[in-house]
Length: 398
Image 1 (cartoon, one colour):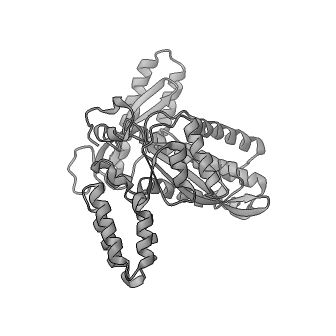
Image 2 (tube, helix red, strand yellow):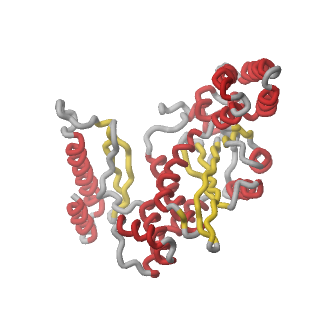
Image 3 (cartoon, helix red, strand yellow):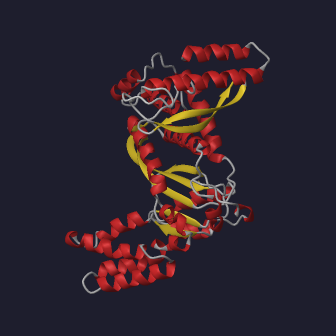
């Protein structure tokens, strides 16, 4: 099947009729995908077969850039497992970045034994410094352009940090990787930014948020994060937004004050505040719970007093979005993917290699979100989160 696509691409180079060839490429690619999925599921489209291996689950739109121009495709989806046609993108950006990181480590002589194992597993031989330099430069240009692009729209924003290991001056150190994800005025998720630094110190958060502001990030109403040092003040000062302390992380911190035997009861008490219909009722119930716990657990009650405003900030937003706004869960899966891919490397040879691989992963994820048919938030219900008067449009089902 890959040979068929290569022949089509060769044909494209030899003919001026690009429109016809785009149609030919689209038709051939669609047919190849249907044949591949038939083989993977054990049945043709719509066929009732008791020996079917998997069920189909519609399509996702995909834009493929060819020598004849842009071709719009519909990639079949499966209910269990996944399918992506190998002929579309044989070397995805993140895989190129991983290759570049491994090659760079190899050239620099970092952990030769472990790097050699990775090189063999990825089928790379005859690595030269010039090859590494060219591949790294190609990826770096794309990642830098993506992370520096102007930001348009009005956003709720999720920010989280994770840590990776990097070699610095002969030592192995942990560095923080901050990622920001937002929902634009069209109701779609985007990766807005990423940066690396020695720790989550207040100065690091300040510089990161100011960098987003310089790229024209405006209209942020809510920023959701864990209780990272220095972030609360910077959210208000730099973005003029409300800070939402991640509810999930808060509960974990609160239960540390409850004692092992009382955690279940305390968790149930706090949940009654989250179950209220509006912000006023939630705050009233929160104080009742704090007062109830105060005689036996004064430290926990004080902890609740201090956190009330930040943990319940999301209650002033539309009920339809509260499940997405009360915690960093919308960004946790992305962080999990970053962890999974970076663990392949283990120890990065330098910070540039870290930005290269993680930036490529984020670029790919952003592209996937852009072509998903369903919006993350509907236009009508996102309108209260925006300063843009043009956002008040009819809701589109998500």
